[in-house]
Image (spheres, rainbow, N blue to C red):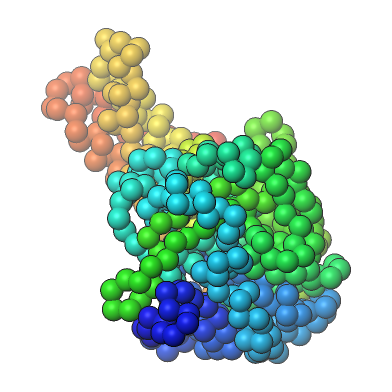
Length: 533
């Protein structure tokens, strides 16, 4: 739908309301693509297969916002029992759509001069002085807020449509990393330049995915333990108590789930103008510090998968630059198997009305990988879950990860032995480089991910009726990994030029790898045996 410039006394006043504008790209149940407004997204939630936003983080941010609207409108279960009924009976979410449509128009205007949606109008003077191009708004472009890893620069003239800017703003509120704002603090206070990390930054957010967006929302909504709280529509909404920027912020406790899932983790202000074809676009933005939340793990992090750090501190599972997310799937299934409260405990109690092979649900894990204040990439993956299969999936993922780790260590050991034999006089400073050229782990790890997911899918397909749905698929997976790893090792060793010494290096490396595969210390599955934890 195209915008039309206003006429009459409001000429020049740009308005844009996501409740009624088609601003969310979606995939429909029949495979067609469409764009929905907030109201139509909630009303048609069971006709939408999935969101199709610009990044996994943006998808999560939109789901968070839809959940906040559901809580604010009272469209949520009141108990765990009612939650199960909502999921099994596929309760519609039209109540939330109707509530949203009846909200005051001024509260939902993205460019309202006093209460712009999800923004802080107090940045207006600073926006005129310090506003930048839109690269600052999009996390994938924002880099260190100076020169960006994908070559977007702060001053690049790259306007965003109002819909793109709105979705990017939602993502900033939940996922933006810490750092320093590119603005002075002389008007609002010096602390406006201290950017704290968003409440989902630095951890893996797990979303239970259903067959439709409606089912996804029902799975992730939960019974509030008190009043649902008010939706955050603007930093300057009347009656809302916000921090100031004259002194260090005191973290505040969210006043219910609607408040939590719509928290304003940034002060953002967007400057609109008319673009081509009568569309409203955003050409300048400014980002300052936002709210800081004091979160209780049981109340506010119901999806969190807790894991021990190297110091023994328990913290939510976090994205790692050195360890792929699928290698931590066992931690996720451990939470599903053992949790006494929260999302995973509820999920164990569901008996899906759908039959047939395949998992009725997927656990979608999403995190932002960053190097300090520099966003690098989205870490994400989906893992199947079927009722009654948590223990089996934990065993398969635990053993599958252990097998891959063992093979990787064996590849490294073979590479070290080959390098020591082929280059006996190498200097200590050259050792890492010589080993790296013969190390097949860098090819092995990417190739191991797809078989790992196929292992989990096969376990689910066998179903809980199978007394042991794990052992046979696990042995097949182990054999495939071993064959692949050996082939990749041979390919690396083939880079050695022909010579007696290099032939000896090749033979010793292969023998070392084969001994690792058949020795007493090798995992049972590599020897064709069944391992029981």
